[in-house]
Length: 303
Image (tube, rainbow, N blue to C red; front, top):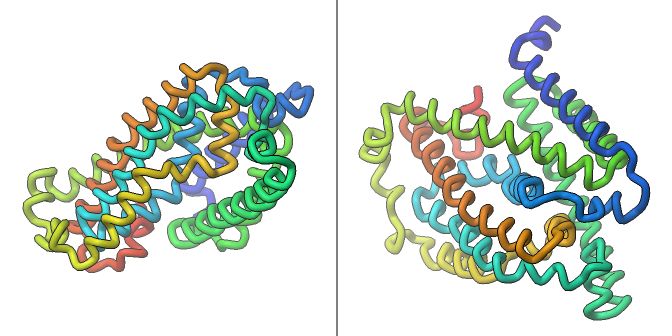
């Protein structure tokens, strides 16, 4: 029992409590469906940028990307840069959302373009996708907590799900957006700290890049080069996030086309820096923990 009162656990408790309180407070006074779903387009560019970053660049991407770069090398990092390019494509697509002022969801948008049947299909598929993503995030939260904090996964999944449901159901997108802002601020402080300390422990950037195995620098000579090139082209040309109901909702929250353009411009500039930090963490881990299994590397880093 004593371990659950240590500083590591107290930090988690405080973070969850602040997230819940912010979400509940932000969602007070919601008067109608439009305010609940798109906050009456009351958020400025800054809040929309941070909620888009929190939605697109979630913690799951860290637990997915770092192991790939750790095991595959620089070719994987270059492949993931396709997302940065897709955000550039989004700069030209996102402003079009202001042409649908009466729409609040992807289903509404599809109905306006293609009719009621398309709205129903979009709604069903969107619900399935969103349910799967939320389930995946909660399961990941459980796995992380069990591996790092020794808290049974099922308890973390239940408690995390209840907290998420409480503030999301209470205040809708207003609660979600404000908690996204808070959580991304914490994330944007924590990730550079992890990258810095990993690089410091590994002996500095020059030591890291001169001592990792040479095969991690393979690109055109990589045995799966054609696969990664295909993924890069697909992810670059088609901004896949824009078919996500959550991303469409963020676009429909924009006041003007300028706000939406600036939103994607900022995200496009931020994403390469984010990817670079993941490369630093993964390559530093290759120096510090060369024998650890790739799928276990992120919990091992945190431990």
